Length: 116
Image: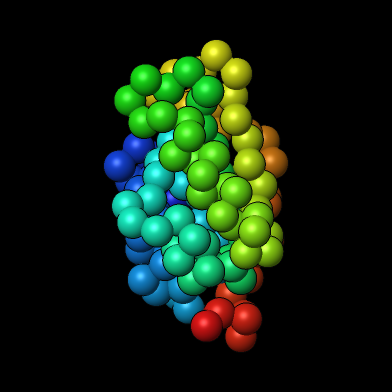
């Protein structure tokens, strides 16, 4: 099972995945962020592959939200990919879901005993 969401659903992606990390093989938050501690959330998700997307010109949810979470996940050793689209505003999901590598990458992820 995989989890993805856009905008507030991007926030929800990280919240749901961190509440139930044993349920998801991978997460794809798009133009989202984290309420609360980035570090604590990253620790809960350190085992989970994630591909994070954000537009650097997003005027609804600042790109710094994804950047902070990416930094925390990298510090925690999480297997992540991060794509930041130059000049793209809030609708980065148009490009993210059109990424030719996204679906094959997502479907290659498997849930294993690595979850805590």
